[in-house]
Image 1 (cartoon, rainbow, N blue to C red):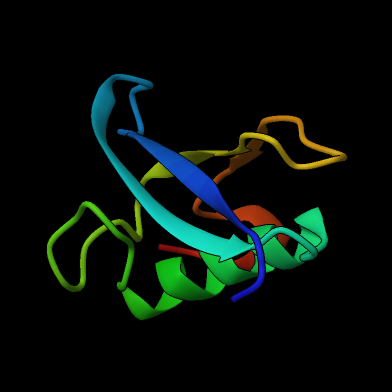
Image 2: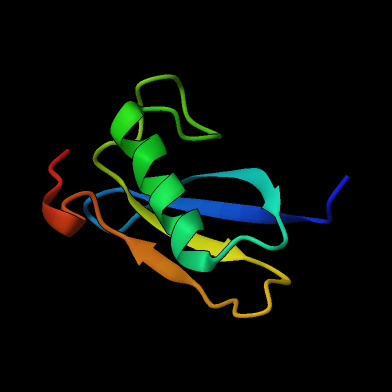
Length: 85
């Protein structure tokens, strides 16, 4: 089994108030932009970990992949890349 890293997600309401947290695992060899794209896809589908099914489309999400060789926090807004909640 390849080495894995934990992706930590922190959800914030439109007002900026903390809402919840979730996490999932990825292979350690994955590029960060691929992790961010995966989170955007999960947001579009309403399949974010730590939230009920269908939830999370209107939240800002702080993405952190601890231990990634190029790791740094990344913030995804619900309207980033032309997407709307």
